Length: 166
Image: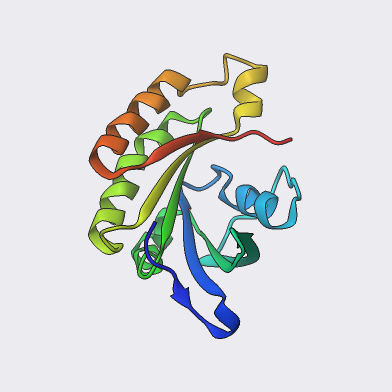
């Protein structure tokens, strides 16, 4: 992962940006991680929203700033500015929406263009609860996501996670 920024009282600041098409569940992932809340439906994000979580990893306090970006096309021009200074970028797609998966390549191209060279990347296949409960809804197979993540890992070290509510 990219180097953290030191701040007062030996805390480290880390910026993580969540990207993906509109409706893939970026806000839900952020809220689940920061507040341990599952919110099945949220309003569309306008521009970006910010979440903060303090973590302790091996005795080191880390202030994680999570930037939840809007996925609508009209916000694409400003979203590239959010990549600057990011230590990690999470690209989310919805396993029940093939178009959201096809858009992953475009998001990764923007990351390569605007983010720092050593930014950590995570590919997340979201909405596993829908795909597992009704196979007809699933449009992106696990093997397709895993295959794409393996290609990304070879090229840039990205990994794949699958998400469902607990």
